[in-house]
Length: 165
Image (cartoon, rainbow, N blue to C red; front, side, top):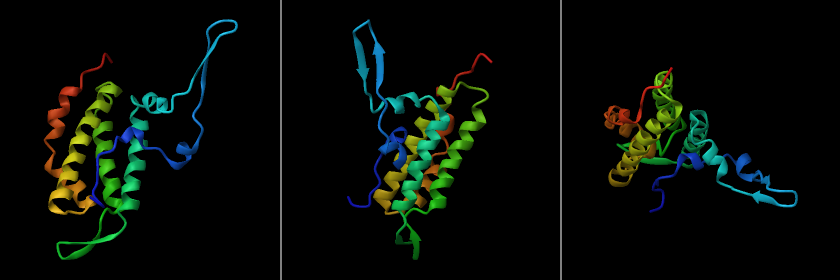
């Protein structure tokens, strides 16, 4: 099981700076002498859930993590390659960003986010399967899954609906 990629919720990715920052405490005054204090460590992820920029920011952190963790050599098809090169992981992200920004003018942001989330998770699951079953390096599996699962974009279009613009 060592060195095997697993599924991770992209919206939960945090930079070191934000992970170490104290979570804000929300206070609600109910009456003259009664006050409710709420501390929700996961609240920030939910606030950003409908924002494409927040999603892609978290996604960039995750992809950079893949590149750092995958910066070791493996033998693949008779060559020595990185398990996950930085360029492979950032290209993977840029592909999703291009798809999202191409449709953002026609559809609501929440619908586009659902469209991207659904498709990305399926493509990443395919990459995980390729890496686990065929011993393909993670970066190469990401690229291959992107190409192999191209039809997922048209299947996921159902999640999009027109805006009243």
